[in-house]
Length: 373
Image 1 (cartoon, one colour):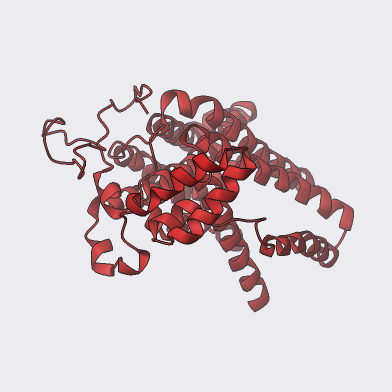
Image 2 (spheres, rainbow, N blue to C red):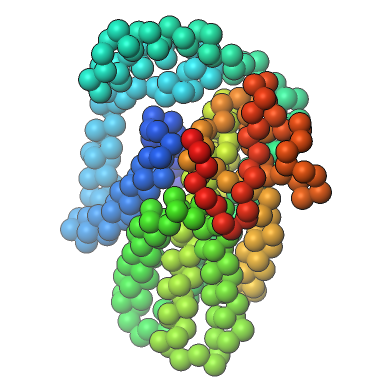
């Protein structure tokens, strides 16, 4: 048990590090595509896991096969193969290491060395962000806007990952338990893949906040229909709404994690995103806990989660829009990254940074045109 806990903790740390590096190494227009491609690879791993389980036959052989595959991660220690995030290095005043990595990236993209050196010489004056060691607990506790964004997105992520298994109960009426297991597994993994494709096609067009509101609304509607009208629906209708709930909850969970990675400042992005992923894992614990109780209390649990998903809709309106905007670097950038107050005019002096530029989100809640960047 101790070994399995250590195994899970290391896998969680690997997932967090890979997600952060993918996000921070790409340009703003490519962030969504890179994140969703990573999620699609994860979905492909779910299908591969099922094939490996059928081929291996026993969990001991399966454990050995997976461990052998993870041995490739030892190659990450090779110099230059797995670079540190230069954005994080600059945000924490590790300018020398950031220059070396940026120079290697520029050489790999066929950029002229003279132009790259001229651009790197400006980093000494441009990196005015506080070092990570200077961020105290009092400074973090005083960042009310950052905490608000983290708590709202963490709450939405928890609900989305906790309510997924509630939609799989509609398939429990099948006679063959093996058919029930494999069909539920395929539906869960397939809906996650479709959700990633849907996010790729819609989020850059309609905005992070608008699509998150839509998917959370669909999750709540599917739950309310299954709870209130489940006895009056036939099997086909009940399973249709179950698939809709699976799809929307997977989309809401994946988009919440991506949204959080864009609004949390670079200097604390690892800590903040780690909290979000921990809440996602905590929400996923509801499925095995319900199975241990032999599904007693599943109806009440579904009611509570559906009510919380409706409550999350009101909280999501307080989030800023991060589409095609630069990632916030320091705590001050994260504090200024918010929606304008409903009671104050957005053109005031409040919310402006040292250069006189505001990071407030002045676009409507649901209609989100592309901002100039």
